Every structure is written in structure tokens, then in C-alpha cells.
Length: 233
Image (cartoon, rainbow, N blue to C red; front, side):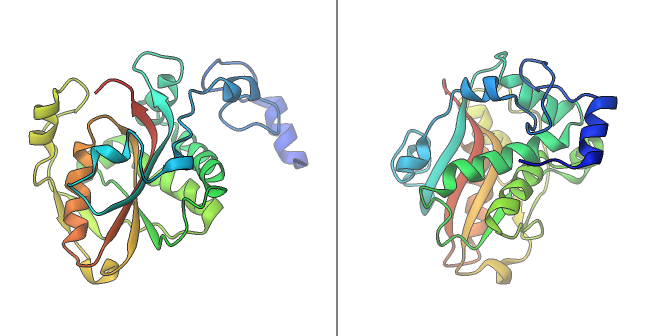
């Protein structure tokens, strides 16, 4: 890929580093160097997006069409640093870059066929203000840059946030997000196929709660895409 003079100059003055290993990126690399990309624990779920370990989390609960995560997520691993920097260190570009990566990885399998729009899982107003952005929205915007899918940020909102899900058990996760979302613009999504986007899926509790609210619009189909899927649930 040919880079601009200004890109090359900026990389010379302020070198970018790989978000996984910390080594300097070349002008053609974004977020992750080629070596780390080759070692990402990719799931390849896009090749069987109708029946995989992530899709099964939602069977019998949602009208789920397809579900896939880009990679397997393990806390405290090198890959976990990507998500941590995205969520807590203000590195919003990681979300956009990884959204583009996921879209390119999944596009050849037809994963996005028939989908009308993406819906990033929303944050509360307070949490978004504290973070400065919604990481799931950044991922969705990266997906949109590759697929052309619009990003709907006004169709569902988060009413409250009890506490972080990180240390919760399965039952605590379910209780924590129960009735946490509110359909805000149902007429806009009625009858549409929506791709719900999140950063990490563990039990699927957050996406279940969000998608159930979206389905109240009527005739809604749901597909799901996340960057990571936690191996142990």
C-alpha cells in the first residue's frame, strides 16, 4: 500500500508501535504488526457463522442469524492488551482498526450479506463521557468503512450501569444487565436485519439484553460480531 509523504513524515517524527508487542510499526501497518497478526488466536467462526460456540450462546433466546468473534480472548494475555488500551487508555483508533480487520476477515465468507445496519452496544451517558467514546461504536465504524453498513447509535440506549461485568459470575452478569436497555427508535429498525457489535463476549448476557430490546421493534433479525470471545465462560 502506497503511503503519503505526510504519513511517512509523521511516522519518522512520532513512530507508531504495535499494540501487542510494542515494536515499531511500518507505514503499511496499523495497530498490530504483521508478526503479531500472524499469531492472533483467530476463531475462524465466520466460516460457520450459523453454528459455532458463540452462536450457541444465543440459541433459543434471540432470533440469531449469524454470530462470530474475531479472536479468542484470555485476560492478561498479550492480546488482552489491545482491549485494555481500547477501553481504558483512550486509544479509540484500536477499535476502528480492529473493526476494519474483522470486516475484511469476515467479508469473503458472506457474513455481512443481507444485514441492513450495525448497532453498537451502548454505554450509559456517564460512562461514555468518562471514556470519551464508546469502544463498540468505534468497532462498528471500522466495520462500516469496509462494508458500507450504516451505524445506528440512536435506536437503543442504556438506562443504567450497576457495576463492571469483569469479575461477575454468570448469574451476576445476567442480573447486572437485566432491563438495562431501552428501545429508543423502533420504527427505524422494524423488519431489519441488525448486526449487534461489542468488544468482548463472555456469557453473552449484555448482547442478549440489548438485542431483546431491539427485537421489540418487530420483525427484527439479529446477527452478532465481537472482537473477542472469552474461552472460559
